Image 1 (spheres, rainbow, N blue to C red):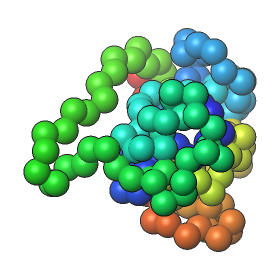
Image 2 (cartoon, helix red, strand yellow):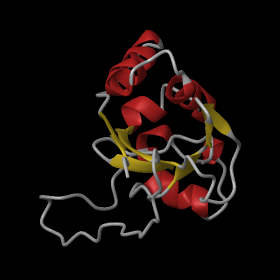
Image 3 (spheres, rainbow, N blue to C red):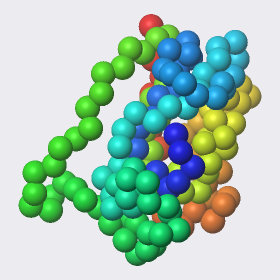
Image 4 (tube, rainbow, N blue to C red):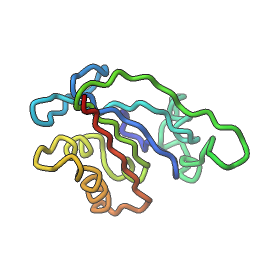
Length: 150
């Protein structure tokens, strides 16, 4: 995942936390005995994200245009969702979140919360939201965390 803002206003981003290191490549993250890492699995549909993908630097993109949606549900045009097929293993997690989280927390900060074995799994979404709010969370913060228990 890159360090640029990951999502437009009102969009959800998807990430996989792979307990078996099957999603290439990324920095290791340890939660208990399993090594894991955060890996982006969706693309954002915003002007800024498209321009970054074309190699334009964040500094060259006007802030007002950065979060402008290029597609959204309910605005009259047909949308095309991102579809991916992933092989998930036991203890892998899927994190669905808004840019309210990823604009406030870096990848390493998100990973640190997810790796904290002192936090029960059911409490992790709230901990991520609290951490983002502690950094002046100025946008809505939505977090859904799903763990694969095979």
